[in-house]
Image (cartoon, rainbow, N blue to C red):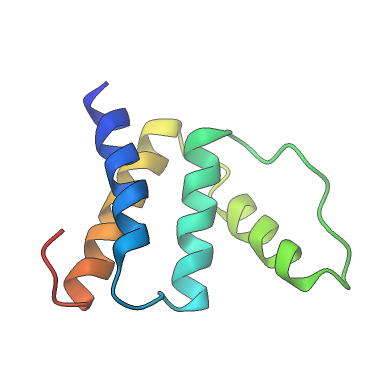
Length: 90
């Protein structure tokens, strides 16, 4: 349960970053968050004209093999990294 609580805290904390992360980092966070909360991809890939949703789906699909705990851990690590890059202690 400690991992779950830590994950939830970091999911809220990421919203307080002083500047928005790059699109690449946002997609990494999205994929890890979906893998940790939903599990493996359970929807069809969006069409070519829906580029935003397609990129999000691809980011989720890229981490599909990770366990829930591994995805949570990687998400927490990424949030901490973003705060370090922003020179703020996470």
